[in-house]
Every structure is written in C-alpha cells, then in structure tokens.
Image (cartoon, rainbow, N blue to C red; front, side, top):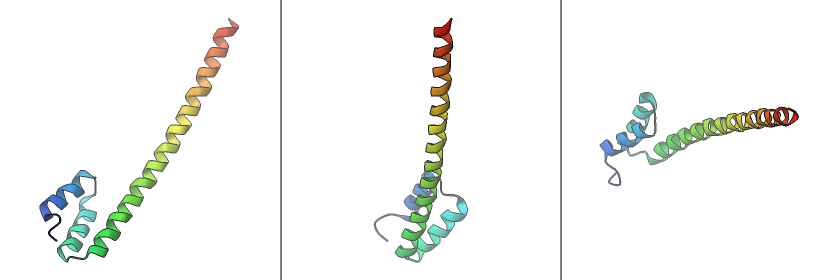
Length: 81
C-alpha cells in the first residue's frame, strides 16, 4: 500500500487514540493489504468515538440546563431582596 507507510499509519492510529490491541489488529490487516477489513475496523472505531461524543454532548446539555436553572433561581432570589 503505497498511499501511506506502515510507520505513518501506526503513528496515525496512536494519534487518534486507538488502543494497542485494536492498533495491532489494524496493522495486521494493513500488512495483508486487506483494505475492506482496514476500512471496516476504522469505521467501527469511528462509530465508537461518535457514540462517546454524543454521550458527552448530552451531559453538556444537562449541565447547561442545570446552570441555567440555578442562574435563573439566583436572579429571582436577588431581585426579591
């Protein structure tokens, strides 16, 4: 696979946070020139990251809601004084 050298591919996997076990699996598929397998594994990892991202977005939305409610209560309390 001339489009990316094995060392660069390994570095990319590390940069995006793929663990050693998954990285080894990807590098093995890459070494066998099994593009469909490499693509499938990368898509699987991408889905896992997106799932985590969506969960974090929900947590942030809940935090924003709580902050809004407490700030609203604080403003209401301050205005009554």
